Amino acid sequence: MNQTAVSEGTVSAIVAKVLSQLSADGGANASAGTASYDSASYFGRRYIGIYDNMEEALAAVKDSYKSIRAMTVEQRETIISEIRKLCFAEAEIMAKMGVEETGMGRVEHKLLKHQLVSRKTPGTEDLLTTAKTGDGGLTLVEMAPFGIIGSITPSTNPSETAICNIIGMLAGGNAVVFNPHPNAIKTTNYAIDLCNRAAKALGGPEIAVSVKKPTLESADIMTHDPAVKMLVCTGGPGVVKAMLSSGKKAIGAGAGNPPVIVDDTADVPKAAKDIIDGCSFDNNLPCIAEKEVFAFDSIADELIYDMTRFGAYLASAEEVDKLAETVLVKQENENTGETKLVINKKWVGRDAKKILHAIGVEVDDTIRCVICEADKDHPFVQTELMMPILPIVRVCCIEEAIEEAVRAEHGNRHTAHMHSKNIDNLTAFAKAVETTIFVKNAPSYAGIGFGGEGHCTFTIAGPTGEGLTSARSFTRLRRCVASDSFHIV
Image (cartoon, rainbow, N blue to C red):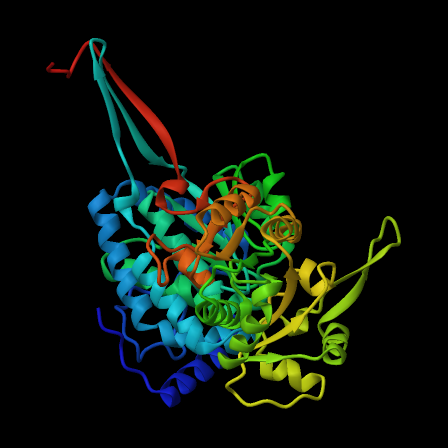
């Protein structure tokens, strides 16, 4: 599959006009026709599947689900193939839109994420049917759709998550209604419209719907509608907790604070490059990205030096204090009155160059990440920053490294990383940290299929146990029994 060649100037012009149109009318009602895909016809078009309010969206998705239920598996897969093609072709446009709307991340990395999700999100091939035969006959167990799924998506990976969810949910035979993050409405709804156009081009229905202006109220309406049988939430701990307490089947992709251990057997230059590549990818927005490093003291100096060779700026103690004052703010607990430091959302996903500029340090565009030495209790170590600032903690041995890495991960059981050639050390850390993803001797993004084996997803469900979600995650098992029949042995 070849990517459509689009120049930077063309992309900027397209995105500017799309954003302008959307700002003018807030997206458009889904009463659009079924015009076939044409990359030049996005200007001013009315979006398919985007409704004025959640009540209208729910009414539409109920009709859509009836049509999807009537499809064959082959028909669903044909639509998915068209979605892959269109989303791959528009990857650069959606990458640009995401950065311009949210102010977070890097266009070149979001481009790669869109290409990855288009290619490596599993389709209907992920569904498995099992059979049991014996003297009592034949029993089939098949993966069936839940029905209508309500999905809440983040601002960090808005269109990527929507595309990934739509492919997996449609593969399972479901329809989906979205309540996007308010800070990424335009980008998310653009992706939803694109997937609907893929379906419409093949004579299919709207496979996904959304609203022009998602709110807490629209999310509440979606959550409590009886027709919505499953909830899938990719976001912060607050919204995930709300979904998990809904009383419905829910998949929650929660927070993480992925630690990295580098021991004295590691290939230190490679570890340095891998860690900086992973930490700086899309400015540290992915929840799997390296957030803090625990390095054996015997190799720490070499590791830090090599990191500076691969695009890291080493901040002094004074600069670290200024960074903390800039990227962290105090938050008061309404019940206890106690205060704690939390991230200043203004700086989430921002370029390292811009963050350093804010404290009076000027660097060139080769600097992708800010590194610093820190105490194990420093807020940079214990807080998921989601920005390209990477604290490094010196440790004396594997026992200390594992103890402090597990403590910094806070029991999220999301993702952890290690650079080592010692199989015993690798095994000990993997057992202790119990994360959904454990990446050895590679950048963090290898854990979602980028430079590593396995499928891609942007909904990593640690709290509810599904792990890296795929089509089968959005199905329920149904058993069909033929007693005393259909066995030939």
